[in-house]
Structure formats: structure tokens, C-alpha cells
Image (cartoon, rainbow, N blue to C red; front, side, top):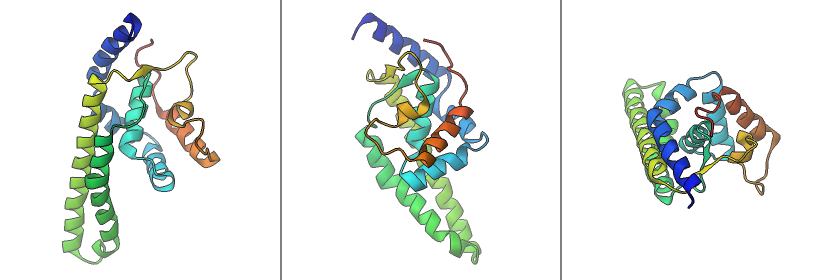
Length: 175
């Protein structure tokens, strides 16, 4: 690792700390169309919304990451996804029963807490991980950063990612 990469990581840590992942995620998710795009990418293409928001956050800071850490995938598979599945399964019955509605709301809060924990873990990894790299020059599109060259790219998926990119602010801190 050279001086430039050490300097990049030092500056990146400062910028990421100034705009925590959870704060970014809540703000970005509330922007026009972002929630629907994230849920479509999750439900139709198997994207993890937390990972997607994390990668958008890094992109906005001029960085990119490699593979998602196995402990994050495990947490999502063992905690967040089961809560989401149960919440979704209870939806029809929650319309007919106030007790089930209340239970579903508690599960929804737990699911959100699990997602926040994912974001906290991703933030910690980002602040200590030296495998984050600067985005290349010229700046690639979000699609190029999120999709590898060997992945099947459906037009609808590419359009969804392009919509996300339009909602991102310009790079927070030029490299």
C-alpha cells in the first residue's frame, strides 16, 4: 500500500465519519423513488438493501468496496431476512386481527433494528477496511460499480440503478 492509498484511506475515514452510514441511508432512502427502487432491486434481483445503500454511500464518497464481508451476509441471512419473511407473511392476517397487526408492527421494528445493526457493522468495516479503493478516473457510473462485467444486466435492473444514481448527491469530497 503506497502513500497515496494511505492518504486516501485517512481522508475517506474522516469523510465517512462526518456522514455516518445510517444518517446517509435514512436520508437517501427518503428521496423520491429510492425506496421503491431499492425494494424492486431486492425483490426482483436479490439485492440486499443495506448492502446497496452502503455501496451508494461509498460511491458518493468516491470509494468502492469488494465483496461483502461474510459476517454481514450471515447476519442478514440469520436475523434480518427471517424477520422480513415473517413480517411479510403476517401482512394479510394483520388486516383482520388487531393482535396480529400489533405483532407485525413489533416485528417490523425488530427488522428495522436488525438493518440498523447491519449498517453499524458496515460502518465499522468501512472505517477500518483497507480494501476500499478510490473510484477510477474518469468517474464510472453507479451501474459499473455495482454490476460486475460478467453479471447479466437486464435493462430494467440498469434503469433502476440509474434512477438511484440520479438521487445521489455529487461526490462529497473530490479525490
